[in-house]
Length: 119
Image (cartoon, rainbow, N blue to C red; front, side, top):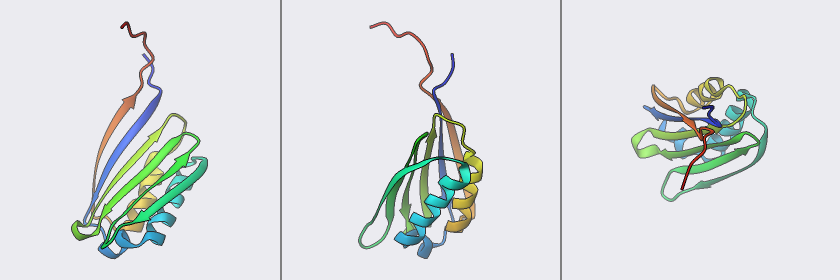
């Protein structure tokens, strides 16, 4: 069986609260992370919540890079899925630095194995 894609879930802790609450900073960091990974950016959308927090996604030709931030907890949840050749480690390093994360936990999954499924 061959997976169709790689799905990486990252949790950044100890992040700079001001960075996590800054819509422009998060948007810029996510776009730079996608570029650094070698992904092909198709479009992006981000939203600032009141009183704080940012959620958004960068749609890439290879799939997506998404984030949800909780400034009050110094926490960001990042979701990076690709069915192509991208350097997720490089992209996440850019994002981790931009958010000032002190720690990171990752979970990696192979997605969509090619197989025949009977009803």
